[in-house]
Image (cartoon, rainbow, N blue to C red; front, side, top):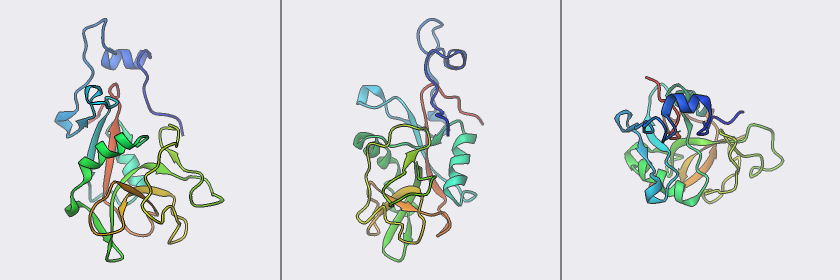
Length: 190
């Protein structure tokens, strides 16, 4: 899959956001759409994130399509700091589902393993094509516990949310929650 990140300097980015400087345009502000920015001033990347509950979303694929329709993609958590920031948006036990009575499953995020893999921990990639160099697996994952589990979500080993990830399959149960990410120069559609 091609990277959806728009780099400053492209004609599209210049027309949409001004890329700072030159025309006096400021990058878009998505707070009115429910997004929270991880600001550069606070050590972040300047991207915008939103945790969403949507009953029409039943799978990882549905979640990615909903993010694309909103101008972004499922969140790609490429560092411990980014993972910690995004987790603050989803650390709400009432939004997590119980799985097998004692495990919490949370929000879809943008990792998946689209190709057959030799082992459960190989073949993972981010939807944007960013390097897969940081992980935060919950104990025992990735494990393909119920067969092929090739989609990523926040998961915990008990009923309380944790900033860890689990490999999961949309075919196991419907998950209606996900985290969107938009970079600073990406347009949000209505």
